[in-house]
Length: 288
Image (tube, rainbow, N blue to C red; front, side, top):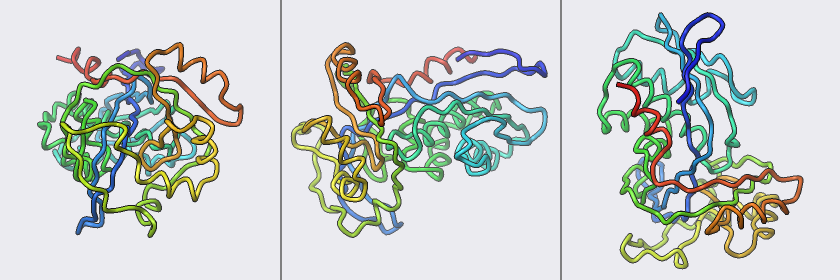
């Protein structure tokens, strides 16, 4: 976390909103509420967006800087702040800024992580003091991936993705490639050809070689750019979530960087380290 005064003298603090990867994603059934039951393994990254937060003197919630591709009123940071206001009755506001690095529709959880950072930070700065379960209920209304970022741990997940068991994953570095297209999560889950009956696996019996991303064949068929990126990275590459980003794991940063240097110019790529705890945890720990 960093803080400074803006031109008006008010305190502005910056907070990390880390991205995630789905190391696998199995769709195990439909739900009566229109969602799907999943099994997945979330890996948090030491890379992502940054959220600037300034507490307002009144109850207004504003996004004063952010990506032009997302209207302020539709941005999950604004929706998250308003949801926390509504849940708690707090009469304080906030001015929000978003330094966007995570590509929208990329399967890396950018919007959900942004929302979770706003919820966790404002819950402290506003003094609303919601407990983890209460905060999760607010977050789940914003998106199925929000709870893992609220929890702050790499985790095994079931249900919609909200039933979380933190896991200590071995250190790894990831080359992530974004081929320049955005994938709609809703369209993939509505696809008639999506596999929806994958057999359940257990954490104890889990083996990466026995897992896959059930959404990958659907995304491959509908987005040739994603198929090309997967093919370029090779047979060990995987799609993250339902989005367009694909990744490959390495034991060290140098190996990942060597392959990253050869990524075709028409794609965006970066190397990130997998972490078991969110960098937001350390930033929040300094608030008394």
